[in-house]
Length: 305
Image 1 (cartoon, rainbow, N blue to C red):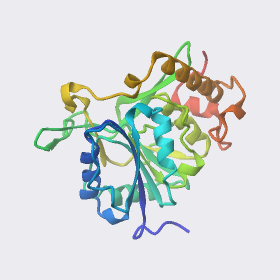
Image 2 (image 1 turned 30 degrees about the horizontal axis):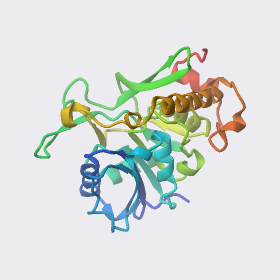
Image 3 (image 1 turned 90 degrees about the vertical axis):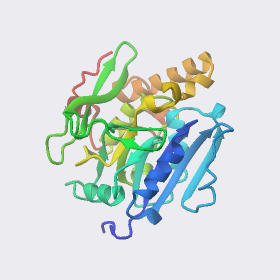
Image 4 (image 1 turned 180 degrees about the vertical axis):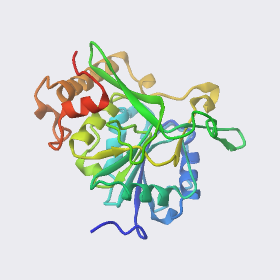
């Protein structure tokens, strides 16, 4: 039995690291949703003493885990912490903590997802930028230009370490129900069960985790689509004070970065190149619905290091 769109709930997942735009993101999501009462927010709030979420701490729609920013263990860890807060909502929206929403985004994304010709659809793209000035006025710089539209994505294998990087492409979506083998974590929308079928690996400490999540999602049988149109925009980093946002590794020692990057690369080698024992990955292994070679062919990669 399919989900009743008239009562559907959405789990909104936000990992925030010392981000002054987190409250802006929450307000945008609530104000521009058709049914804010059906939203639940899971937030991994890696904060300093100046930050406040007092407007939402007592709101039952919010499940917030606060950590001193110094204790953060990176991208995968923060999103894995959020997934512990999932309670069976119908849909899952994964975004960054500096996001602007379209009017009616919740209904629009549900309709887009349910119209895909797949039992396991997932929507994703590298969300285009927006700007916001000191008064809170938002502007979309690419609107009406050649850059307007839904961005496609590309990936690159970086030898000799075997790092796979995912970036926005200059190309734009050109087909109905256009697929991609790539997942970008500043915008993912799918059924809530994805959280349990393809859980975030907390050992993936930085941006390399997107490639691993792409491969695991694909091999678990998900059909990955570009959205029909843009419902989510991503803040241009020039909007941060002095054009600088805080990064996890700035609060870590070189030794911590080196040790944990080595662990992440070892796990990527198991996933992508079959080098190592997959049992070391625990519950974060590949699925059995498709192969690594099929993913690489669609991604346009030759997996050799």
